[in-house]
Length: 153
Image (cartoon, rainbow, N blue to C red):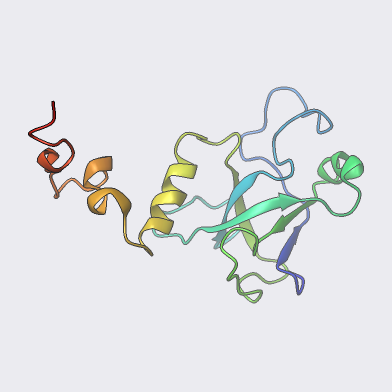
C-alpha cells in the first residue's frame, strides 16, 4: 500500500476461472473504475466467512490506462482504497497478505451496491420518515395519511 492509499496486488488468480482465457483488453472484469470489495484472508485460497470485514475500493491503473491489460495478464492489479470511503488505514494490509477481491461489475452487481448504500446509511439519518417510506425498516410502518391531503379536490 502506498501513501496515497493504493493497494498493489500481484499474482492474483480467479477462484473459478472461466473456460476460456480472459481477453483483458476488452473485458469489463477488474477494469477501472470498477467498485471492488476487498477481504483479508487467513491464507491463500481460504473461504470467505460471514464475519470477515469488507473494505471498499476502486480499481485504478498502474500508469498508462491503455497498457492496463498487460498488468492484468501478468496478474497485477491496483486498487485505490481511499477513493470510496476516504478513511483507509494503509497499515490494514501488509506485503504477503492473502486477500479476496470481489469485482462488483461481475459479482452480483445487483446486491453489492445496495449493501454499500445501506452501510453508508447506517451513519446518517435515513430520509423519507427514517426509511419507512422506502420499505427499508421492517419495524416502522409508513403512515400514508401524511402523504396526501384529505381535503384535496
